[in-house]
Length: 322
Image (cartoon, rainbow, N blue to C red; front, side, top):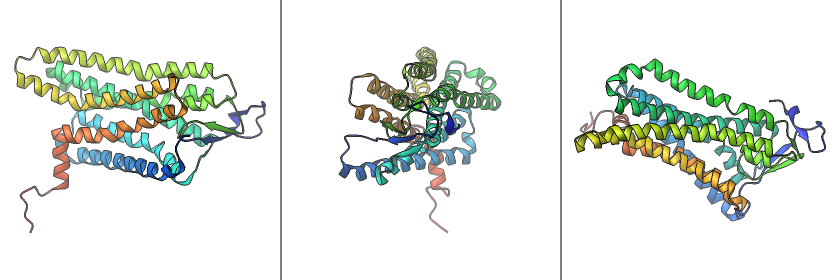
């Protein structure tokens, strides 16, 4: 994206604006370092936990199944999603590095939105996988072949990479002061639109429509999948059978709840008449899903737990040394 697309508030195109990340306005200076340590801890936890899942699944042949192929997609997305924003936030809290160039800001916006969309779509594919496994178990090997699985994941990634382009292209033509103040810890689309001197209404409307597509439509598909799953599980006569069926979905369902809870917090924080700090924290809470996903899958999924244990103790628990 060319920096010459940016227009100054006086209508000239002589210089590219600099975006100043305000951060959390009410955060006292003495709290910056503790907040830096907290986010550094979360970031390292995200990198460690999701990398552990990636390595464990790829190293364990018994996990070469559609569900776990989608899980490594989710783990990769969690790493990319947080890496698009958290390092800059850490630099802001520790070094007071508030500035971003026009190109850097729009690249960060694009990556953040793309990875957010990808995660929503991958969660839908995972819900479909669970639907087929529970509601149509005899057709599962036919419907969820490796080729189909790869095509669904590739479609989720490709759609998510393309969707943010129109609103960001439109936003790049808006007028900005030479130094535009972004009331956030990173370049979020709505915060950038609000920092413009142009009328934000068309961009806000387009952003709202995209949000509907990438948030509520996937949520509706996930809910429909689980409605069919619930109906099928309730028809299982044995209590043990019902428990086993629910256990195969519990990890994914918890991740879905965490993901959409963070989106709901961000949405309410923006729409409600609240101070800017609440708006900012609503977006910051988006890192909760990447933090919790590895914990959920390692604690609740016995196959992933066994693969990680096997990787950590490759000679088995009974090995007593040479």
